[in-house]
Length: 108
Image (cartoon, rainbow, N blue to C red):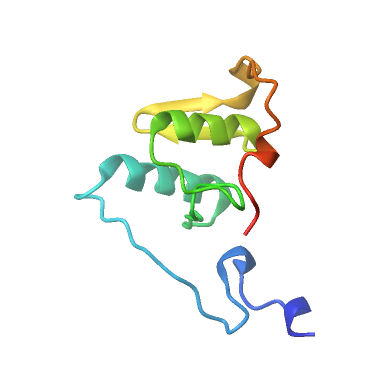
């Protein structure tokens, strides 16, 4: 029953015990990322970006730009931001691979 109770205005980041793991971004330390969050807030009235591990269940966390791109292309992510680059999935060519990536790693 606890899982069906609204716990916050931002339920995607709120744990069942009403806690969340927050990280803050200082404009002086990371102006690009801070600016992105500010623009997101202007558009959606929510100054929060969800930051989670970048991997698919069972796979190791991405470590390289190639890993990030492969994970992006193999999942339902719409966009990938790496440094100063913004990739839109609609603008990418399909991967040339006959490997079933879902069988590449054993699920945990």
